[in-house]
Length: 251
Image (cartoon, rainbow, N blue to C red):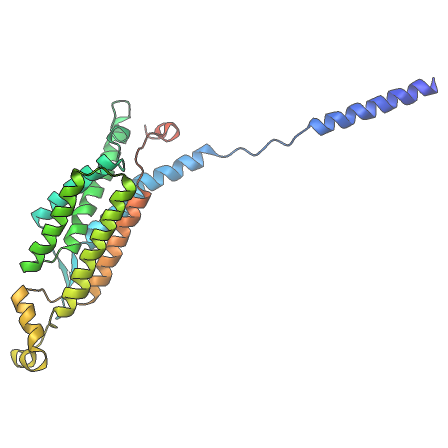
C-alpha cells in the first residue's frame, strides 16, 4: 500500500509540473481605440493645422523700413502651379482619390477629407507665393522655371520618391535665388538718394532695375520655416484614409 501511495504521489507531482509548464502568461492586448484616435488626430487636426500655418506664413513679409507686417496675396500663377502639383501628387500615388472620397464613406468623413485637401491646396499655393519673387523680371524668370519643371513632370514616368526629389531641388533653388541672391542685391530701405548714390550706387541701380522689393532679412527666416512646415506635412500626409477602425469613429 505504501508503494502504491508513493507512486500516486509521484504521478500527481509530474502531472502538476506538466500543467504548470503549459501555463503561459497571456500577452497584453493593445488598445485599438488609442491607436485609432491618434490617427484621427494626425489626419484631421495636425495636418490641417500645419497646412493652414503654411498658408498664413507663406504670404507674410516684413517691411524693411519700419518692420511692419505685409501680407502679399498670391498671384494667379500660384493657383495654377498648386493645381498642377496636386495632379502630380495623384499621378505619383501620394494621394489616392478613391481612398479619400468614396460612396461607402460616411458623409462626415468625405467632408473632413475634402477640408484636409483644401488646406493642402492652400498651403501649396502659398509655398509658391513664398518662393516666387514678388514682381519684375525675376518673377517671370523663376515662374518660368517652375512652370517648365512642373509641366515636364506631368508627362514623366516617376514615383513619389522621384517627385519629392524634384520638388526638393526646385524649392531649394528658388529659395536660394530669392532669399540669398536677390536679397543681397537689394539695397536697404530708408536711405536717401544721396546716401544710395554715395554708399553703393550699383546695388541701388540693380534694385530699381529689377524692381526688387525692400523687405527685412527676417522675411527669409519666416519663409524657410513655412517651407519646412509644408514638407513636414507632406511627409505625414497619408495616401489613403481607408481604415475600418477609424471609420467606425467618424459617424
